[in-house]
Amino acid sequence: MALEVDGQTIELDEEGYLVDLSSWTPEVAKALAAGEDVELTDEHWDIINFLREYYDEYQIAPAVRVLTKAVGKRLGKDKGNSKYLYSLFPYGPGKQACKYAGLPKPTGCV
Amino acid sequence: MATKKFMFVNRKSPYGTVYALESLEVVLISAAFEQDVSLAFLDDGVYQITKGQNTDGIGQKNFSSTYKALGDYEIKKLYVEKESLEERGLTPDDLMDLVWEDEDDDWAEKPSIILVNRAEMADAMAEQEVTLSF
Image (tube, rainbow over all chains, first blue to last red; front, top):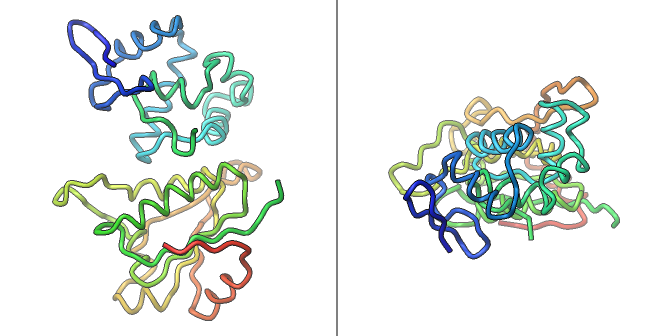
């Protein structure tokens, strides 16, 4: 699989995750989301940016439970729950948000 | 699902074999099942959590920082054997500052590393229902 963004070809694996994590740009995120009929809002970007920072710090994509707790701490209790996260990422906050953030699929996510 | 006491025993240095990374991945996966997970570091396994590692020369991903995420996964008991440190000329100061945040105590950071001697390590192992050795 591959994605065309600004004339660049971005290689994707069979599940739609980036093969080369360093090829990510915000434009890539928008294109990945558009492929699933999702338009990224500021609320989506809060989560995507958080995931990228988390990966940068710990070298892993956090499990959903960890993501939920961390979002609650950083963005407030009203956002640190799976209802809110699923409203943004209906295919699963771990899988879908990590994909847009250019991270590997979360460890332990099947 | 009933909660069981799981211990992952780490005896090998972090790079050179795949044991340390495999252990860490299984640990993170097991945490998703909300079990009572602890880790033990002994023999060369204590090197897995030493500070200041740099893998540039061996072309491998440096996964040191992933141990710092264990607290987020509710893994708060990292038993480290004193004798294994001493035999390698290491002290607790050579280990990373691994902590967990207590949500019920205004997110206060609390230490995860528990220094034990060999006999205490044996006791901790004896309490487990499932022990996985890497």
